[in-house]
Length: 408
Ligand SMILES: *Cc1c(COP(=O)(O)O)cnc(C)c1O
Image 1 (tube, rainbow, N blue to C red):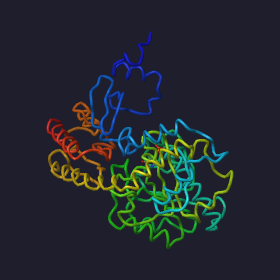
Image 2 (image 1 turned 180 degrees about the vertical axis):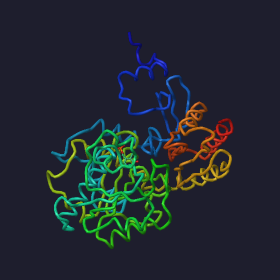
Image 3 (image 1 turned 90 degrees about the horizontal axis):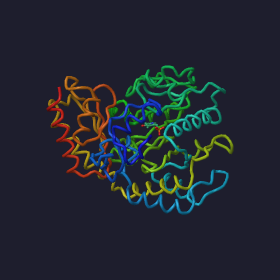
Image 4 (image 1 turned 90 degrees about the vertical axis):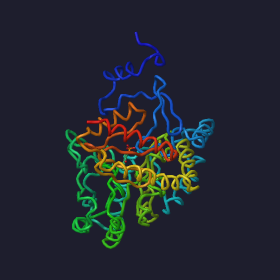
């Protein structure tokens, strides 16, 4: 007999998943039951500071009051129409998102991977209709060590064997160059190139920040060679780095911007392709779509997210608290931290491998009430909600120091 969910312990619930849930994740052994702001609580009532924030889907913290209010209000009125009809929330969402990002037109989708897929389709169609690439020949240039999602086409141009092995045959038409290498990009882009697709900061790769000038260089190169610049800001965007978009650190505007994760306020999946009018204009009725994309609940929550970002408060917090984070990590350099990369409230921290794998450090931090996740090898990613306080951040850094001191 199965005990009612509320009577089952964390250990029971972890055991119960094993036979019935696909094993495509290896979660830390914590079972979250409640959350508010930067804090989550497990089934037994233990509290943890959430220093991962749903891979940046929770930039505004768990259950931000303005976002929860927007969702509740919309749930009481209208949740889904499909795009067969108009709904009264979508125009405002698109208007304000376009204005926030400095671009013209919005294609609403749901998950990040769908935004990437949609961006690829728009770019290819632009290449055929506007640039005049012969049919079926369009190429897209991407960077090694990218992470753009998990669909068959997206893993086609991943360089992570774990993400690819066993899933072929793959979609052709992609060229992979080293990240942060303008010379390689120059060589790879030719008259068939529809777009260069990159993350302005590579999140999953370990928060890899390109050299100053790289994004400007990509912008200049794509303009000069007559192809599109697609910036995947699904993880780096919406306040995380201390700006609305990470590309703003170099004052660059792409032709196509991909957003997701935090756009749904941690409540519903909301993603978008945002583009210049001449580019998005290639799509006509019936050529692309999504049953749930642009639904009124998503639009209401997305509009509330844009509303939070319009105040500038979260970008400012990320900027200021980012200094606290960087200073704290700098103090740990040589004391368990062999290196780190940080921008805003986002850091990839390389732990001295002698002290343990990223996974082991994450488990030790979990036992001390801090939730983080390793990326690769001995690297852990820190990405707390932008609502975290300076004291909470300092306390988390203190815990990291303690865990690194004990490890080995
Ligand atoms: C998470 C992520 C995606 C994929 O988003 P999903 O919602 O998981 O499909 C794409 N690009 C980047 C940069 C991401 O971080």
